Image (cartoon, rainbow, N blue to C red; front, side, top):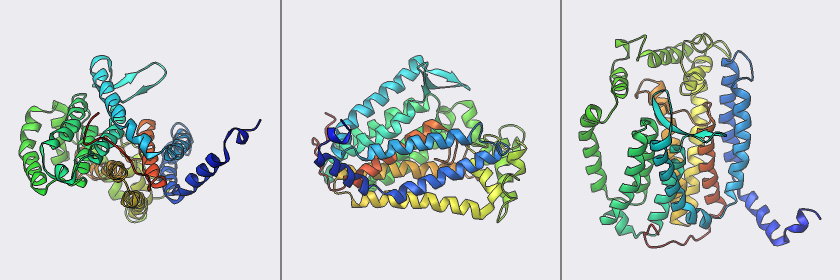
Length: 384
């Protein structure tokens, strides 16, 4: 008996229609970004597929298939799973505090023997789903200004504090920025937004003085004056700036970047791969890749715009916001416009965990596109 004989014709037809609704142009642009990353990894490894380029492409291929599979999942299923995924993410973050694996002075990982992963990555998806589910059942007036706003504020604040304590300032920033963006898109009052911005600015000195580890404070000071310690804490930023500047308009040529090829540039395949790209392909190469990122963000936001359900709109917009903040923070970090916080350039940088999180998020975005006419039901602003 064949597989097709076990599937009812109606189900096969629906699956074919869903696959046809998938945005394959979107998938192609993601593949181009991942391909550019593999191209750079091949170069900085001395024209070798090992140890990064081959694994990067294999991971992307598997994650791409996962994205397509998740796009077939009905939006109602995502809605039902929203709070459980968020709750599971919180439990994992608490588990990190108790039994987490410490590496390079940070307790961020859970080691299960077979695999080791960062639970904070689960929360990047969990916070988007949970807030989208919450606001889907909330009236416009309550979303604008009411005591209900304490609930999403707590939903964002708890994981941010747990992740910041690990410490992982970059991921904590991503979760906070994504959560705040969803609250704004859901209709938060501009008076509250303005008050929040003022409060955040006033809290910065206290946060730097009392809420950061010594090495984090040093990163802030280094960002302000990297030349004060050129061979120590300022080394990353200075080498990145040298790579960016030496690339010029068209770059030094593929495989000819001195900063990356001679190992002056640290983390050249992960956090600072964009500087590697700039050195070898110059301003033109950087703009080309940034245009690909802009295309991804545009297509994902367009998906959010055409969704009929509030849950779908906020889910797609939340995932897109996370992706955009990845690009903005890493780009600013590489150019010396922001402190080094360990945020990679999505899909371009080497790293399986971040790639998996990004592609799961885009699976959700494509699910919103495929099921854009689906009406999602949920309780009235309830966590139950």
